[in-house]
Image (cartoon, rainbow, N blue to C red; front, side, top):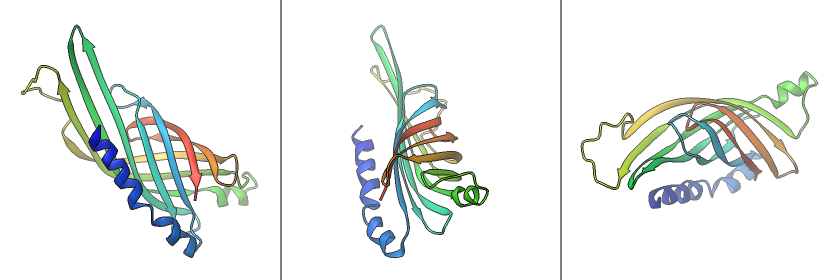
Length: 178
């Protein structure tokens, strides 16, 4: 868990300078924090965060980090997997296109995109099984996709939902516009 906390702190510290840069160029910054449902790797309730910076009118790029833990305890035997996903993501925002069709308002921000990242997995148990044949590799590259939307309750705070491939099939949470 210490590694996950350190990675989350490093992730947000790396993006701490973005608001000043984005405000100079008039770019938007969105920070999402949420939970995952429908986990691909057999269980757990993942948590995660992502940051996107608008680089053009409808295109945003950024990064993400997700963490999930899955384990069991049977009669004193305990085992668990820890999954950490991190990488880059890019999204195309459909708001302007929908406005032209008369279907959107400023509070609604639908988008679709791709992500490229690394999935790490670690196994641990309380008896020290050394030769466990894990179905997950210790680290692998993955390509994911997402379709989602944000809805802003105010100028700066809203909710988001995404479906796609990553640590979970569905992600829900809060979004902040900086």
